[in-house]
Length: 460
Image (cartoon, rainbow, N blue to C red; front, side):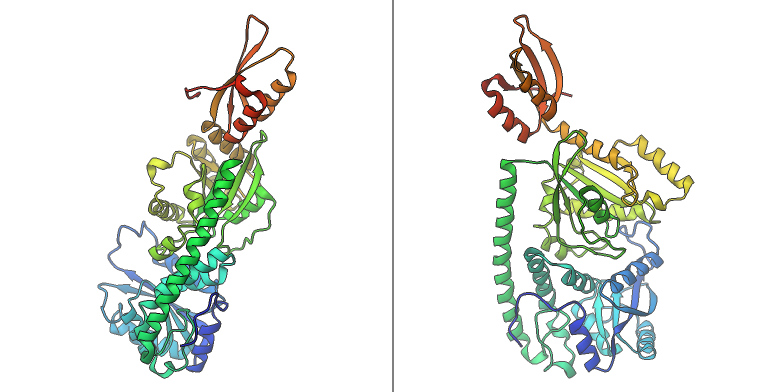
C-alpha cells in the first residue's frame, strides 16, 4: 500500500479510475433507496420519494449522472445483503443494462453487506455514510476541515478493509475509502491507517487549541456571536451573504459549503456582532461525522444567539427542523439552552400568496420565529432588530453619575449603550442607568473610572 498522505484527490477521481478498470462507467450511478415498511420514530412523516430525491441530490453534488433510481421496500433486513435476493438480482440487471459503475444505497451498510453487494452487482457500492464522506472530502478547504474529513474517512475505511475486490487487490492504494487495500495487505494497512489516525488526531488537537486561543482573543475584545444553523440547502449561505456582503458559495446544491465562515456585522443601533455560517445538517447524519465536526461546531455551542434557518417552502420543512434540533441535542444544545434560538423561516419568496400570509401570521404569534427571504431581503430588518434585542438581554446594567459639563460622556453612553433611566440629582449631576455589552463596559470603565458601577440586579 502506498504511503498515506494528507489531503485527497477531488471526489470521484479514484472511483472513476477503479470502476473503469472493472469495465463500468464511473459517472453513471444507480440510486437505491431502502425503505423499511415499518417506519421508525425518526422518519417523521417523510415520504420515500422525498428521501430518494435527497439521495439523488447527494449523488449529483459530486457530479454523478443518475442512470436509474429504485425504491426497495424492506420487510426485514438481511444480514448478508440488507435487501432480499430478488431485489439484489433486479439491481444487478439494471446495473448491467444501464452500464452503471456505481450503486448508491441510501442506507447504512455493514462492511460484509457492502462487500457482498459489490460482488453481486460487479459495481462499486457506496452507502449513505460513504457518499456524505465523499461530498465532505470535496468541499473541505481549510486545514481543520481537511483534517476532520480525512480522519472520518480513515475511521470509516478501517472497518471496511475486508471488502476488497479480488481482481483489484494489487491496484488499490491511498487512504480514501474509495480506494482501499488488497486482501493480502489487510493487517499491514490496518496498522498504517491506525498510525495515520493517531497523527491526524494530534494535528487536529493542535488546530482546535489554536481555535480556542482565537476564541479567547475575541473574548478580550468581545463581540457577541450569532451562529447560523440549518438543514443543508435551507439558504444559510445566501442569508450570510446578504447580511455581510460576503461572497460565500451559495448554490442550489446539498453541502455547497462546508467550512465555517465568520464576519463582523453591525446591527441597526450600531452594535457589532460576529456572524458565523456553519455546515448544513441532513437527515441521518452519521454520528461519526457529528463527532468529527464537533470542533467546527463549537462556535454554535458558544454562540449568544442561534439562528435556525428553515426552508419553509419545502414540503418537509418540519421534518428537516427536527433533524437540525436532533444534531443540536447531540452537541449538547438541548431545550434548556435554546432560549436564544430564533427560527428564521426562509425562502418566503417561493410561497404562494395564501401560504405566505398564513406563515406571516404564524410568525407574528411566536416571538422565536421570523419569516424572511434572503433572496429579496424581506424581513431582514426585523431579524436584525430581534437579534439586537436578544443580545441586549445578556448585557449588564451599570450606573454612572456624570458632572453637568460632561456632555461628551453623556453622548458616548447614548451612542454606545442603551440608556434605561436618567435621574437629575440635587447637586446638579445626572445619574444614569445604562445597559452595556461586555466590550462596551470595558471601554466605559476606562472612560468613567470609579464613577461607573455594575448593578447586581438584572434589568428587564
